[in-house]
Length: 237
Image (cartoon, rainbow, N blue to C red; front, side, top):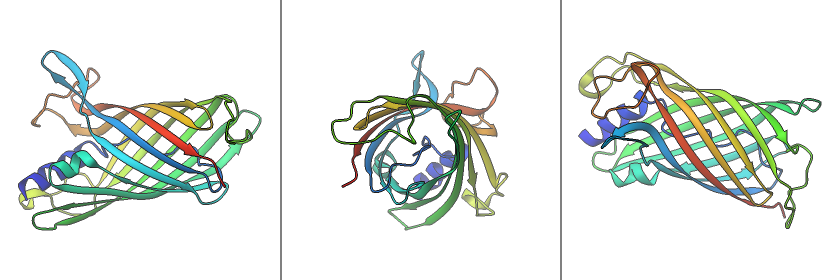
């Protein structure tokens, strides 16, 4: 119980300890298996390192502009907290001339502890703007053997919502909406892609009264997270 509440509070404080799953939808009927490593930057023995949170994700190109996905969090499970995500990403608009696109990604985050089976659900909505500065994801063929490299940068926000009025020990919930801006880069071929993302989590949450020392040279609120993700893409059949 105690671990569950501490972990849940940590997740809320950092407004989702995970990067953007998919900024650009897959092609229709494409599949992807990905794994990410990273989290908030902390001071550890005179070093600045990201907390090694992990998650594993599967995605499927449902339609031309819509991809559905699900994720599990092995690190959280190791501490007795089951955490999973179910969501989708939809390309809202794409400007072909400038290769700039806008996408939105609604997600449901589900958390439960293995002792008392306390269940919590946290809705999330990501909005990103991306620019294909190398290649064109909307046009090239992701076919077996295609070695063409594409790359895009993106900028956006994660909106994390707390539905409960109280947190641990019946304390009042001070923040029901948490905002986290993010910036990242994604590049690779039709078969393998790699992503780096920086996220400013818990933007308006004080980071002084917590159990770890967050590295944040910008402010005494929130934490800066760093993530690395590897994607294996399976072409549509």
